[in-house]
Length: 97
Image (cartoon, rainbow, N blue to C red; front, side):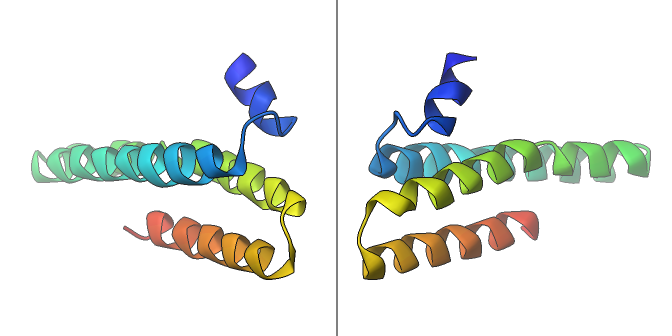
């Protein structure tokens, strides 16, 4: 629980939020769930299970996007826009991988 509360309260640096939590962990989770979903689809599992597994990382990814978005308030104008735009593009990409 401390993991989530620290990120919501901006007690974690934006660099850690962005690079480790969002890009590294979020992307890895999304790719792993995609691989499992494809395996399940190939094994003719029920479609609801395939979709569920595929969407499993969505709450984490949305949470990380929110934390990066709010954490970007601490940086100046150009960097804030760049971080927020990159985070938004990343979220769109992991939704459609």
